[in-house]
Length: 266
Image (cartoon, rainbow, N blue to C red; front, side, top):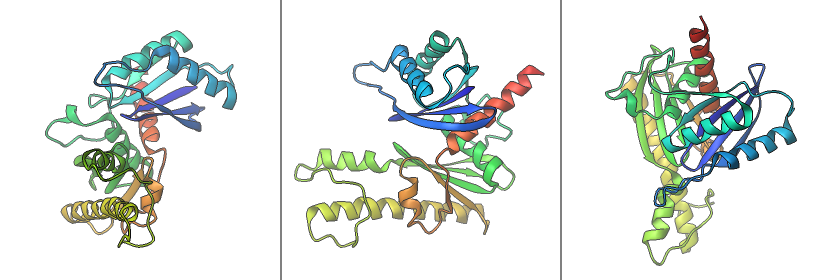
């Protein structure tokens, strides 16, 4: 059994791979606090993952390895310690130095988030290229693979909830509202006006940035794949998103893990 772990700023996705097949995936809180420097512990994570395995999977199947990509560097060591203590397993970490089977054609490869690299690997191998991955999480990211199969960068925008939370915090007369598609763009009250602005503003940003990327690629046929927590909601109304792949990042991570471990074993 391999545990594929995608550590995000808000949540961490854990994928269970048995015989190279994804048999389940779960989201748990990342729990980091930049102000205090405190985060979740190896024991908290170990007990939680053990419980998930006992309830949903065969607890007697040993965990051979953790494959990790993380945008929270401090949590890599926490998961590494957890793997050793609770599963006696080693941890492999995806970064820009890994063999990705593709060129990273950007100015500073070390600055590219490992989750974005995983998305690029997966979209190339599973969906084909040229392609754009729209990842709707704490940040909204757009990652581009050209027709040669190379990762060439993309765009990073504030996440939908990230930007709306800042709106609620800064505007004293506004208040949190549920993220949902309103029936009308013209809101007749403050709550509906905010719902409209948040939803249609995010949708407009997504489609406009995708449109600009497609124009810069100069290709008529470009795969546009969405992933992340809000992918399903926005894909239903986007002009460009063709498919939602909720486990795209995990798929790219496990593809990179297998590629690098095969190479290392030769």
